[in-house]
Image (cartoon, rainbow, N blue to C red; front, side, top):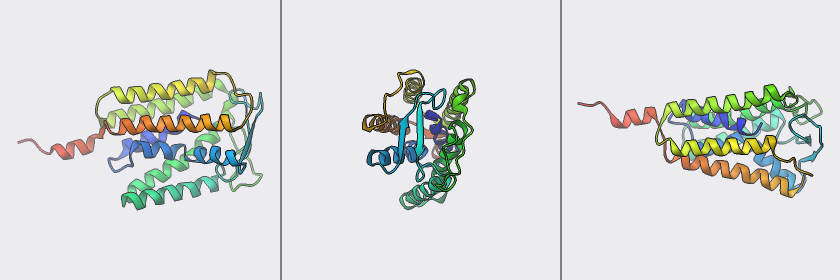
Length: 225
């Protein structure tokens, strides 16, 4: 998945006004991919372009035991949740952030061919929906737009910034699905992925400054006399 990983971020932001900022949750949703592409730059984890690897994605993700094992994902979740707990002194915020990080493995399990391990070994798993575009495309759009709608219902603020954010995410996804495939794995591909995550996060940070959770708004407004 790509923008589907931002669905848990929108959902967490909708759940409670104590949730971390939307930009923080966007980082959480893609944290293990941030790490994967950073690791790929230095050869700690590896991938290659293999046309036909799946119908939708020509990537052979053949070595990613640290970021995309369930154990590795859980460690990233604990570390990120601990960082949020240290920064916010709020256990609920930390739990929500950790759950968003942990959601990454489950969402990838739905779409990846068997290339996800449990503990970094050779026990590979993946439902492989990237080989079923008529299922994978509505699924990713559905969970992303559904979570975005929930976020909009649970927050108050101008419509413009979140409308721009979701448009940017959909544009990124369209390029990912229908744009020309990369010719080879390497620094340019890794850099492009990291830049896409960065731009999405910056737009999320902007949106987060314009909207407030409805419960917060009701609390601040207080009863009218």
